[in-house]
Image 1 (cartoon, one colour):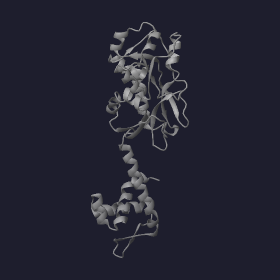
Image 2 (cartoon, helix red, strand yellow; image 1 turned 180 degrees about the horizontal axis):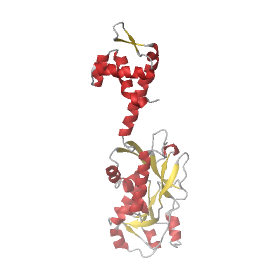
Image 3 (cartoon, one colour; image 1 turned 90 degrees about the horizontal axis):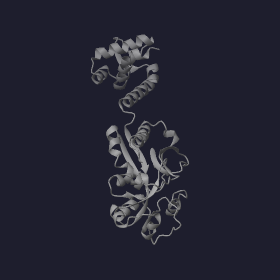
Image 4 (cartoon, helix red, strand yellow; image 1 turned 90 degrees about the vertical axis):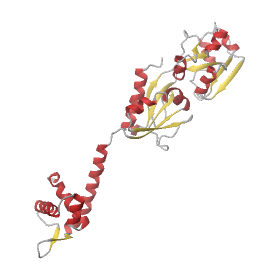
Length: 306
């Protein structure tokens, strides 16, 4: 069937049937009533049967034939679908709202300082950040993509590794200048700042494990400060409150800016936990999710964390 050839004729018929008037259809389509009548007649010729009942004068009374009445709803529905399809073609596949979930600390220390680059590259995508310390329900909260810290397995989600991480002690430059810290055991005379935000992960490295790695026979500090926010841990160290066991991804900018100093850099302690991009499997082909995931990976590749 050569329907595309007769799209204009179909549109003329649909408008005439809706207005019950060639004049009304002509006004809507910005043509003359004669042009509408000619288009309708061409469609009738192609179909081989009339669409409107003729009067004795040979003019259309704009009363639809029985066949035309039956066909009209489908034709109108078809035009609605065409309009919807054309509107989708006009839109960028990445436009719309992208719902992203990350922890408050990851947002503050890694994502937010970089997010302007994503927004510049994809101005049609509006990012909505859900910053929660606890894992959110992607379905119930309409989340498209997130970054999670762990072993890479979360029920109902696909996970792709974003970054590995190392842990090491850090302190303010002032404290280092005052104390020197020639041996790991000397840290125990200071306030050790503990990050309890990830304590539910048994694999998360602790001060005791780092001291074991450093070869220290002592593990008990004179004073301890426990904080359940990774960004708060680092800020306390920046303020001179003590020595923090830092996560390399979180501490990168503070180290680069000189707000923190890494102690005993010759000692390496890789965390078994890592950062992962996570999303629902049914959203794997979602264009705006894909570009955000690609952007995250490029931020890591182009600007290594360590």
